[in-house]
Length: 465
Image (spheres, rainbow, N blue to C red):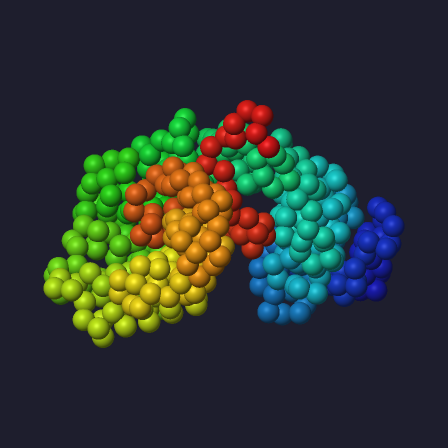
């Protein structure tokens, strides 16, 4: 590159606005049209970008360079191409470079945020959406602020940006940055589904499946899950496997249930292993030793793959074998429940607490019953409220308190009214939050960001707080 051409290109970098926006990366990456072609970039793009400073071409050049960043020179040239477009007031270039920095260059986080703010203020909906995600999580130097998150997402949604529309559906569902409203949530999710968002279909499917009237609609839930299944969301396959296995929203069809469970398991969804084992135990019972062994292996694999609730499935097999459980089997069952409880399984906590309260399989212990039942309630496993109510009523492990006992029983009855699945007590997981495949919406909005699991299943009564 000649000295003159370098001066001309550097002048172009400085031409449109203040020099403070030019990064050191851009200065190192100055290059010519011929160098661009020799790097394997189409000649037409190189000419349009580096001769005519066409923003669309510059963005494409930048993307091609940054798709292969193993070489330092390619990285700098990619950033420079984006920089030239940014100097030409191209907000799309600001957005694309910001997202590249966020996903690939940790030390450029602050620069990414600056670029996103610039693009968002210039009306780029994708930038507004990603700012909403950053404010939702409190990422880096950005302080978590749900109101600001909702505000940015709403701007993007009003421009018709589909992920933001789904995001607003989540905000109304969870009451994040806005007063929760199931009616509004469904309306926004419906918009996103109509625009072809499979993650919104998955979210709306769960709402239709676990809400109360007038929103409960299992047939519609199945249709929505099938839409998201076609897009490769394995959590949807898991849900469909449960629905066919139990005949919810459709006739029971074990063959179809297996097909969907197989698909989810193949995609690496451990919850499908768990739920398939549960379905087998519910449908087949525990009288056949061979099937018990097969189901126990499913549960063990699910447990080892990160599903602590599977410990309760193993325990159930030990405790319900025909002929009654021997002492060793009871101890193994309790050991599995303890393993599950220690790894955060609320159903295992509940079953441990209930076992200590009943004294059926192990010696009665009011202290242990209260500890494990309380932990299960803290983890929002509502059947444990009934056990805890009994402990307060009888002064078992805690001072007698009839008022507290009644309050807990009232809460249990309200929550059990929401239990669409009678088998949810057996730890089927129609949950709203999780990891990856198991999320209610795109993986950005789960419990790690909100700390909330108290999703409303019906509209609050008029005048209620």
